[in-house]
Length: 265
Image (cartoon, rainbow, N blue to C red; front, top):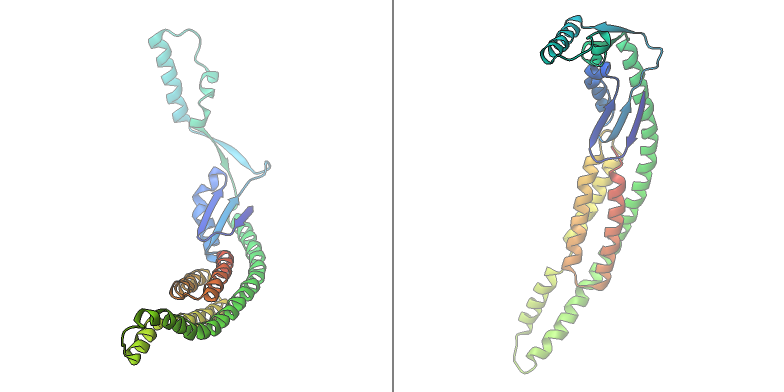
């Protein structure tokens, strides 16, 4: 038994085995599905030359082949003699190996191989979780920087907006209260406070899922999408250079997390 696995978003199993074991392929697949929900698995099952095997002959089929050859020879006056050598080329049609095997033993060996693979991948997974946790903590710190920068950027944006509007109305009487109201309305459209808060919630959920048992890969896939969506909104709403620059850095970290999460079951 040889099982090779690669990280993959979905479960893909390819089994290569002797033909006499084809009827048991679903058994092998079921054993793998019980242990793994994601990944590409290449299974190779081979039998040594010492395996006990007998030849099984289908004499009825061999007889029909012989009769067909004799008939062909008579109809077209083909010279020569139809003998055992004539039908030997058709041996695949009437001869097969009758191999005796113990399926219980084969299944046990396969289960042992799957368990060894599972333990190896579990050790790798624990190391991977630590790396993802480090990246998520760094992302949380970036979001705290984003909160601080956003709080500073809002009044700065309002001041810049007011400075641009005043020259347009310098020769006209305008209501200062109305001016402040319009400026506040425009500045509010650029506010990213809600996105920052939701981002924090997604980070908290991410850490909770990382610390839980069971199948977590697909849940983390979804949370990565949500994190990316919030950062994209922050970047599009804010006209502040520092906010945009920080959003780019956050998206870079999210991409690193996304690549690692696809390796987690």
